[in-house]
Image (cartoon, rainbow, N blue to C red; front, side):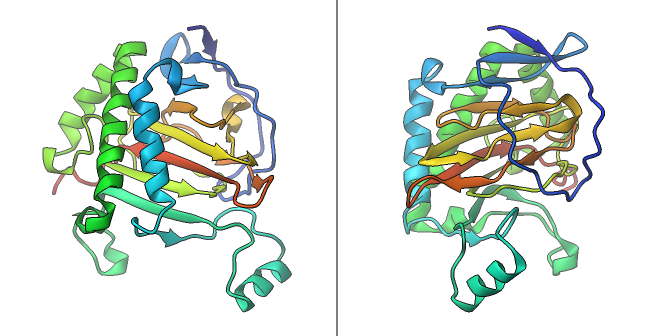
Length: 268
């Protein structure tokens, strides 16, 4: 696999800014390096690395799109003008349906009167068992790919998770949690709640839609969010955002299935 050395670029992007539409400039399999050190990688089609992962993630995506999985309706990223939003609210509809589901560890949120960590309630939903199992199996297959392609990243993350995350809060070996983001084009942000030094995994399912590419201004890097792509990246490290998602046919969507390691569980 070829290597791409990421270099810093000047930009004026701030946290909270909406991410504009940007054509992807990282579209082929590559290992991402910074100062010669591997920090992640991009795979255009996971079918070339693990047919099991293709099958597991397809099951997870199908279940997510069914009524079996509890979901939270979201409103992040470009949703039209203020007039559009008011009209949507009046008619009880979304311009683009946005949904999200969390699995694994949920950090404490004292401001919401929940000063304790917990496991997502989705795990207790009988109809969601297939989804939960498929996501866990997908996580383990993704971890195997990380171990094969970048053993240095895998070994470092194993060490950091053992130091920072008690076993009961782990999702797989390298993570604490998972989130499925359906049609969510997140504004620019940085994952400050993650364990520093660790990576996230983002696997994309996409049908009849364009956009939804991850853009990292620090490197002027925009990753192609094509169907069955997989991005491994240290989301705590840089500000990043997701370009607008536009269905090209009715029912089109982009669903990102993400695995990530939170630092909030160390003392629980």
